[in-house]
Length: 94
Image 1 (tube, rainbow, N blue to C red):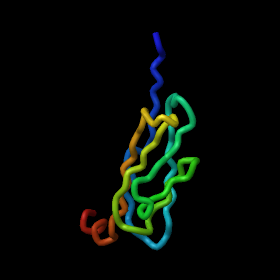
Image 2 (tube, rainbow, N blue to C red):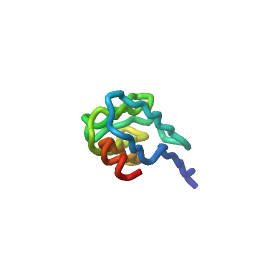
Image 3 (cartoon, rainbow, N blue to C red):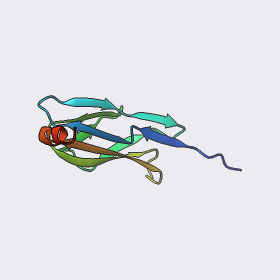
Image 4 (cartoon, rainbow, N blue to C red):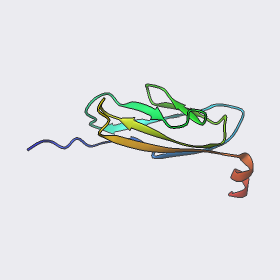
């Protein structure tokens, strides 16, 4: 029987307020990925992610998705939702 390789990326979502300072949020890969985990960001104006899984965000308001792949064939993917909200929206929801 083939062994099941479970892996995931945390946190599953990141939500921060827009500001003048760049924020860094580390992603944590847990479990047993098939290979080295690689990251892609759908909108790099909102967030970027390093090879080590450090997410930089906060300069621009908006949302994006980070996709994490554990192999070059990209058949196994995990997602992280990212949202940068305006300060006014953050205060209104407090």
